[in-house]
Image (tube, rainbow, N blue to C red; front, top):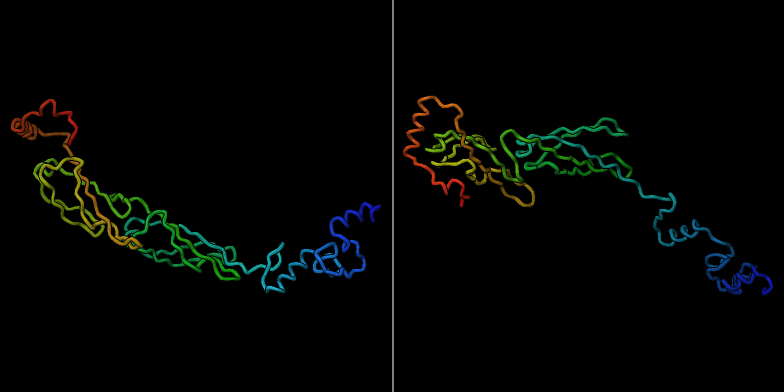
Length: 253
């Protein structure tokens, strides 16, 4: 043994059992003769078979037994106008399935959704051996001609005539629930705003509540005056008086 380099290496690694060619192995160690001293070298497949038999589990090794796959998830985009998003609606969504061809389903859109929201419909995706996947509805809300949305709040810009701004009065403005009257205080300036509490978007999520509607006023000055209007403005200016020079550029408080 000592004169044979190959046998010497085996002896150094496994001791006397490594040189026993009888196949008995004596103590049955984890050596050159295999796992458990069975007299043969076992490959990885044999080892995993023993674990499966002992523990009753499934081992995924190189494509061997796998759990059944669930069907593929599907994502479909839906475009809404603002009032559909605010009030909720029903939409029919369509997509083409690689295995089943064209598919469609009617979806209930809850009130208060916004751009970027994803609605999850469990079990409405592609079919699979372990059950279908999920259907995700991606929401896109179009901009509105009147309302500007900010979360659950909406903003509306309202133009006033010079008379309405100076003398005040009542005007009708749109809300998400229809037209309502709003009192304009005398002396209203461009940039002034009113808050209509609870006139915004209803939140049906975890943080329940309702937003507000903000009304932003803009005074519209006439570009072309008649002679009579000019006379009246001149008379008004004489009674109004001049703005002091130091007040013209002072920052508002």
